[in-house]
Length: 130
Image (cartoon, rainbow, N blue to C red):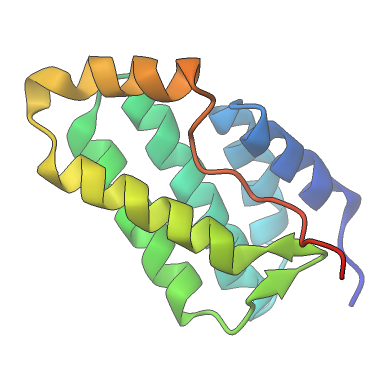
């Protein structure tokens, strides 16, 4: 399996909190991919867009996109990809989704600020080396 260089750029943008840029990069790759990578890329970019919506205080959009991204990733057979821990990313996304589902709309701005200040948005991390 040859992983496109832009995948790594997209992941870096995600992990740096540049969610819309991550979306643009992975979307361009997603159009060209075949399964199972296609769903994997789409799931990651949907979670990135969900985070973008959250930063813009769009609770409904954030909840929908994070949920859709998680569904794609849960249905995907890749537990790790290109040295990244997809399973851990899904776990982080599930925690965020539970928070979003219980969040009162007037608290969305505070949540977004807190996540940004604590650098606590979901990240796609490298697998630990054994």
